Length: 202
Image (cartoon, rainbow, N blue to C red; front, side):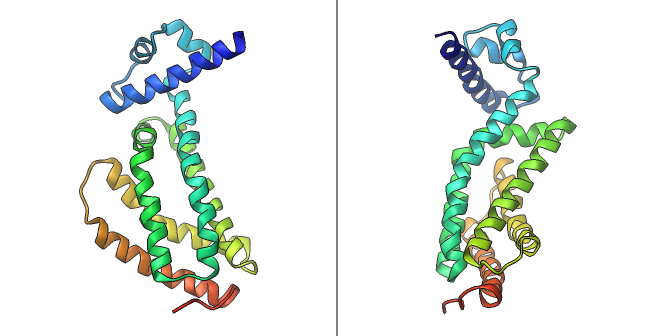
């Protein structure tokens, strides 16, 4: 019972932090704000987290779970890429942005003011590159791991850029961005498929 109560309190603090970060932003949110929203106390908060920034690892973990299946779904597309298939995958990935916005926005805000958070975010980005590289290699088994990571970092750069644009609340033409990214991704994935897998479909 005690372990279950502890886990319940910890999760409530995380949920409260997500809510308050969304309303006030990371920088303006205090530990007291989070504890009050959770119906708890400052002392209880520090039983679970050393600092406010410690919460961000939890938010990053939740965000990563949203994307794990998406990268798995890319493997068959990488094996035999088509422009329609690549564009659909990118569309699904971008649609997930709305689901993870409240998790990702405070992390990106904190990264600009707290070096340790910037390091965590950099590690998370490296993890995404590794996961995408794995999906590419699943579709093209002869692709070397170093080459897969190079391709993955190039493919993710525009997606990451527009994700940050989205998090900042700046408008952009989603259809135009999808079309341009799909064409760029298709060129790279077709090259991977031709060199390391099955021929790309017309």
